[in-house]
Length: 121
Image (tube, rainbow, N blue to C red; front, side, top):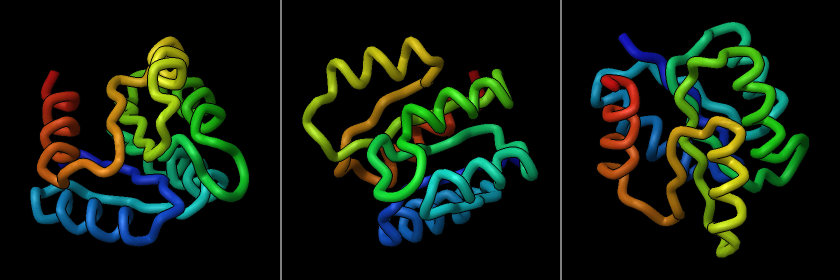
């Protein structure tokens, strides 16, 4: 069974996405902040990470992406943002090893399909 970690500072995003992925058969871990998220990453070793680019507290998404890829180079990271600066951010994230970049809002189906495609590849 594949494990997915969601790090996002919006509880609604975590709850909705987590519930949807659980219903699809994934084991889901969630964190509202980057520091806790990195602790979960170290302990649970998820296969995929859905990561908000702009977190309110602690390390920002791009810093977490760097650490996640150092700790677990094969993890599939999906960056998630609701901000408009996407081209520069997307390029930076992809250069650091992100596997996908999604804009908020997006459908739960789109998130699920992205996770599924990355994990079967």
